[in-house]
Structures are given as structure tokens and as C-alpha cells.
Image 1: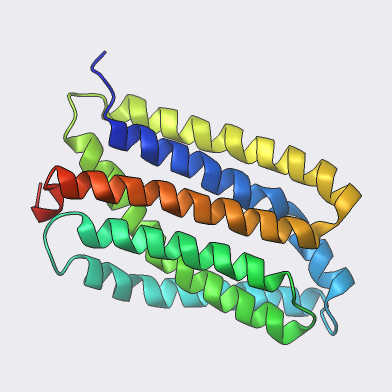
Image 2 (image 1 turned 180 degrees about the horizontal axis):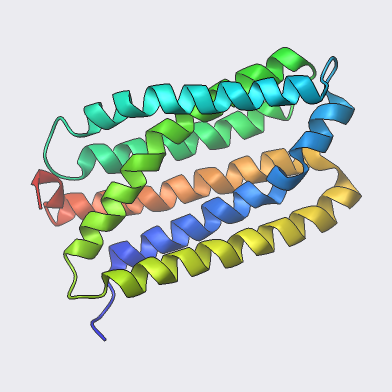
Length: 201
């Protein structure tokens, strides 16, 4: 089996941290919305979810166009970092939320963040795998497995600790870990620059 590129290892690690952070609180957010935010019902939660998906679906083609304006992976990697950081900061700020309008704004900004990193992340990973020697399917599978195990671990830890300490503190923890994942991706961007990959594959 060929040696795995350090960029691939770093991206897989970033994915694991990102998804663990996401599942620390995501399974329990609806309970938090209902119990701790004023004026929130199941209808408002559904509306906020609508806002998230409409925002992400509308904005992602715009970001994808901007990412494709130049050859290479610099723009894509930069958008992944930006999306991760925006998501992380949004979770940290949402720790101080108190009403339904905060929920709507939270979902709107998360939709923008998802639009920034979603397609860009796939593009960076696929292009780096494409530069390998026939290991693409195996490494895609390894990445998916790491994501699933990390998500499971995050849900387990989150379920146990939020029942003790409350969800607000883990909104902040989730945000911090998401930012850490973005910093890992920044290491990939630096490596791309060093190897002059951002000028084109």
C-alpha cells in the first residue's frame, strides 16, 4: 500500500474533530431550543431548519462559482477554513442566545457556513486523492469510517456530559473544537502552498 500523503491524514483528522464536535450537541439541540429559548415551539424549530436549508442551498452555488474562478486548491481550502471558523464562532456566540430570533439567526449563519465548506471540502479531498496511486476508494472509505466513529463518540460524550453540565457549555466546546478543525485545515493550506499545488493540479 502506498504511503499516505500528510495532507490526506490531516484532512481526515480535521474531519474527525469536526464531526465529533458537531455531534456533541446536535442530537440535543431541539430540547435546548424548546426548554431554554423564549417563544420557541416545534413550529419555530421547523421554520429555523427551513431557513438553514434554504440559505445553504441558495448560497452554495455562489460560493462554488467563486471557488472555481482560479485554478488550484487555494480558494477551496480557504473557503473550508472560513466555513469551519464561522460555524465554530456561531456555536460559541449562540451560547448566549435567549429567544426565537437568535435561533433563526443561528440557523441562517450556519447555512452560510455549510455553503462555504461543503463542496469545497469534497473538492480538496478528491483532488488530493486523485494525485495518489489508486488508493482513492480505500481512503474515501477510511475517511467515512473515521467520521462515523467520531460522530458516535461525540454523541456518547455529549449525551453523558450535557446531562450533567447542561448544553450551553457544550455549545461552546463544540464551537472550539470546530475552530480547531479549521486550524488543521489551515495546515493543509500551508502544505498546498509549499508544494505549489494551489497553482493547479
